[in-house]
Image 1 (tube, rainbow, N blue to C red):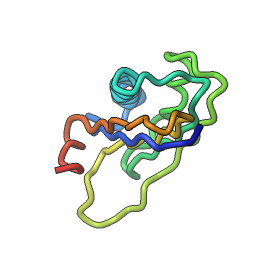
Image 2 (cartoon, rainbow, N blue to C red; image 1 turned 90 degrees about the vertical axis):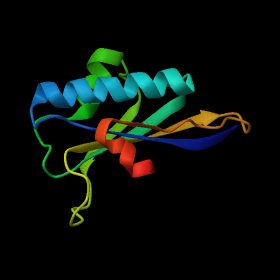
Image 3 (cartoon, helix red, strand yellow; image 1 turned 120 degrees about the vertical axis):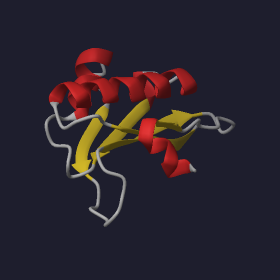
Image 4 (cartoon, helix red, strand yellow; image 1 turned 60 degrees about the horizontal axis):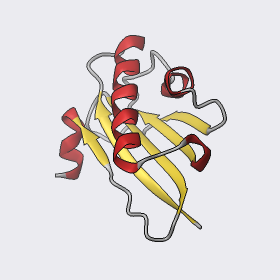
Length: 115
């Protein structure tokens, strides 16, 4: 068994708890679906641009996904000039089989990060 990282990002409409919640749940739902993720195999790190500070994304993973035992951390992205604003990113580290190929997910305005 080995560990691999699964990356994803989404832009958030506005700096409110509800907007951060909706973006977090949308991104996590797609990452879980695309990669068949189960809580017992993961840890993850959320990051947000400095213009998003109304809520912790990990809160919604715990409450809405029931992920109470996964290690999670939230922090701010480096504030690079001209970088994508209002962006929530996630790195999920999974314990997996060697042949597992992660599927990264970039939604809404964050799709241009992979373009």
